[in-house]
Length: 174
Image 1: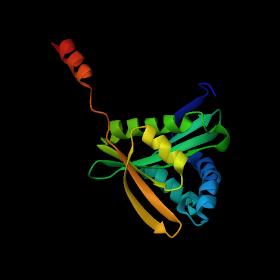
Image 2: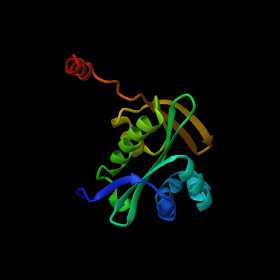
Image 3: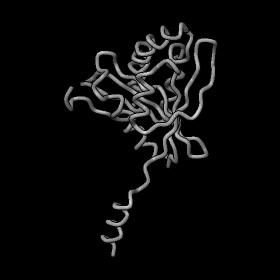
């Protein structure tokens, strides 16, 4: 895939492409649970635009095309809630989801002082859960939503500055 995919903040102009990609990406999720009424498939363009205005939304672009996206917002207690990590089916398995997740974590830490990250995944979405675990997320709760679907909540704390980095900082300022 190379370095041709760029990640940046989404703008209103991207809203329609994000929504189309969201509809495409969540079809498999809906099929997995036999529920086509899930929020990602019923979200309206107006609602997405409102989300763009208040939250932190990133897009991955390949030329003019939006091929991935992720969203996050930080609650008053410093918990960053990350959601709607989507990657175009033909771009999957190339590390783009990982790049998007790392990018939103960094942005939420820098711009909004996130103290921990939280996200929820359907219990059957094993690939997604595996991805999050490999990036340091730990399952903390499972909650039934319907007879067919339980949501697994995973959390991660930002890595503290390592001792080595702190030592180097002191050495530099001494």
